[in-house]
Length: 297
Ligand code: SAM
Image (cartoon, rainbow, N blue to C red; front, side, top):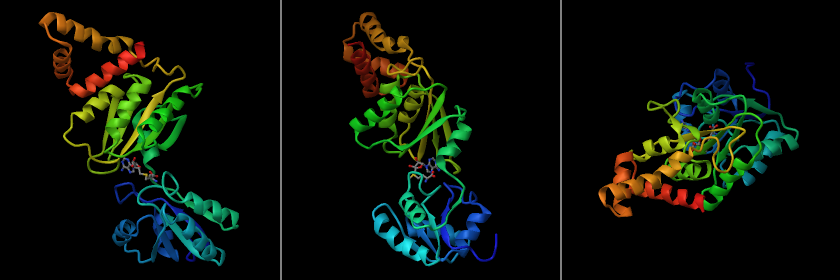
């Protein structure tokens, strides 16, 4: 690394948990830049304090991105060295940064990537799912209807080879998202939920979407950030084939019927009993039953 940093916009990846996951080059750039544009200055300050870096910070987030970009471009045009960082991981990946990059390129300002951690790639490499072809989609829409539509569009996309779909999810929405994935792809789609990557409680939950969903639902509280990875094969279609195990779908109503006749129960009581036996919540099993019935119609 030369002593004087050349003028330009530096996109600096920062750790996604473990503070050791930052490159020597990233630290040099953060030290030598004129200023660091941060998604959240307080968050970045913790990292800078840890590494004894005193470079001034300015805020640059989704709400002021447009205004700030114009000002930063002016500074860059007059020879400034500006680093941009997000709260965690790689700027521009489900994070602010891309507007500034486009404008810097248009203004003829050098744009320099300083690569490092990104939650998507970190999760993919340890997932055990196909990594030759993957499709990163970032966050799904927050609204339930739009989320379903987005997932259904994925099912309909033609694929020649197995492909891993990677998405980001927050802990308070993970259960709903898994329920939607289960409804769209069927319960036997193979997935991985990667939680708290590079942190003390790092965890990979691997299995069918139904298994991972019920494991998480059984917890008192779901903590941490998630990356979800879905294994889609060329045959994956709207019914979830080849992952859909039709016996499993049928088995909910079949098992309920069996319990009803064996123990003289009404449907509600049988559902309650089956939920207990399967280690699921009543409402979860009821949703599955409803989906099963809807699919048969
Ligand atoms: N730019 C970042 C990157 O390159 O990974 C992603 C930023 S996005 C706003 C934040 C999302 O990334 C979280 O909601 C979560 O889905 C995922 N994420 C970030 N850090 C993570 C971690 N340590 N473990 C699991 N997922 C993480």
